[in-house]
Length: 113
Length: 270
Image (cartoon, rainbow over the protein chains, first blue to last red):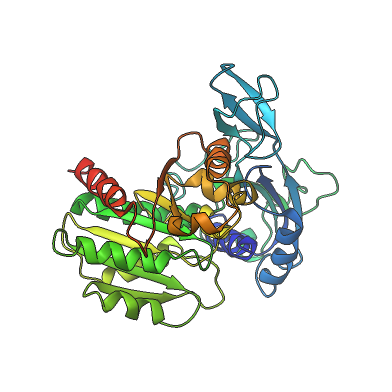
């Protein structure tokens, strides 16, 4: 449900950027939402459509990259891919894991006019 | 000088670099007309088919606004030596009962204050005030979590002596509050044994974000099928460093260890 808040955060950042970077409208947004970021992409798209109405980003296209989750396994001393936060290390089956990628929640780039 | 990053004018727009914004003289006719590329046609765009649009690299964390408020809150806590605890759980885990018991036990020893988050009603703040501790209720309305901005405003209205403990009771929700840093020193997740032992796997983000898990209602364990060791194992799958204490707000079991945990972390701030 916090996808709505995330979209509100996006709109706030866009409004700030519109002032400093002199644009009126956002046509496309490139986002990076990691697999481990706890965000449901469908819910995000739905919320964005609702939250962006009447703003400078109304009707904007969302391009979402989803970086793969990676964790550092303390037992294997290497970084390994995972799908969820509760996955075991695919090499050793252990759980001494520290997230090192895949929790990104970023706006990368905009196409604006 | 550019107000975006302090660079000198005339060195703008370097394709491929993060430092990547354009400069417009204030009276430039192109700015007034809304055209951004001085008649040179398409922007330095890397997507095909773009005309007068342009690309802007911003590389910002979506939650950066919240995080900047959280950092301001954290600076205030650090300045005043206040231990701030963000209590998170699902609804009905016994969070408020555990908190009122904690306040009753600590009130003579330490300065205390509470920020209560709920969607509606001030029932919980009233329960807290009945213990004699100052509390402020934040109603999030439709919101499913507290954010750092709300907490900053609540702090303005709350008298909290230096070197005290501030408890922030978040909205009962095991999902959304995980993503919003409030500036707290520690997130403490409360899981009652009347819930499923697999909650750490079902809601991994929250258990990953917490430093301590309080297993509440432990006095009910004999009447339930709750597999305690398995629950702890699940929590450590998600967060190998999470500490665990077994407590009961009604029998008082484990409360001494919880209070010691708080004292130890408060001491560490000094």
